[in-house]
Length: 254
Image (cartoon, rainbow, N blue to C red; front, top):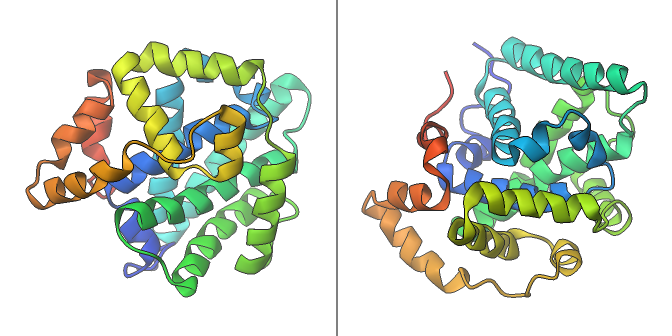
């Protein structure tokens, strides 16, 4: 059986562990709020109504693709493209290609950043592997203007961070929704996680410190994984309503 991502790929290692996914989740939740096209996510009303569920949905689709047989992965990507197409039809407008690229670039960047925060530095070859996997997803979705190489992506990613992010009323509202759905303590943990994982431009726009208070705690967390106690920390980070989603993060999708 031919899989969309080879079984020995670093991408499977990244997306097969709940803690790395939570950091991807944290980074994406920060940058989502700054994307100039975030109004598209407000159009359906689903994002402000359930921001955690919306982000879990995005993560779930990505994991399904990473661990699927090739034809099943193509089908999942086509379904995702059709969902976006239906939203475009309702609004009688097209989501800009740069907005699609921005979300795709987040998946690449935060996959790399999360693994490096929790595990080790990736080699350039491994980073290229992450890039090629998600670039294939974007290509299948019909996104225009995708970079042809990892080096080209690095350049485009920097340009995107400078040109396509802005702090807006949507940003402020989305963070209010994060606080509402997480509660004050979990919300503070989210902010520290975002501070730890986000690029400098994102932190600057959101008014975050340069250094996260979670940094000195990471060694304790890594020790907890060796003692199989990391599930407790994950449960502390996210509300009880997402208990099943939290447990699913460490299970390889069928």
